[in-house]
Length: 137
Image (tube, rainbow, N blue to C red):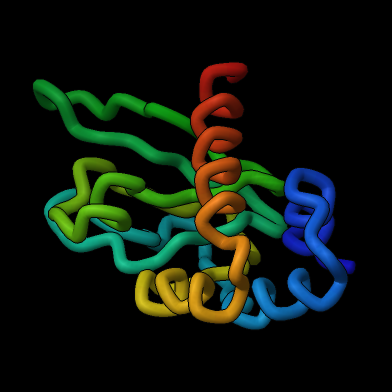
């Protein structure tokens, strides 16, 4: 079982069939140290789950880099406003190390609701857990 499958199973308690359906929308990718997942001003059209490595979310303010969050194994990475509302990204998201991620595109993310009838409730819980997790760090 991958870390993504464990995360979904632990936090959402979905059936094995639904777990398989949800994770089938994710594609494994690798990122090299220094590579960008998204840059400020561009559209963030994917959501990533960090399997291995470290990813930094940051912005340039007054000629300084300000780090908002560092995602490690077991965390999601995304410019959420850009992903959900289809607007330019406010944050740069860059690999601090070589990374392995599971990635879902915005288009596929929207398709999950067509396959999993309970997705609306699961998505609400997912977003709440993401915000709560960020507040704990």
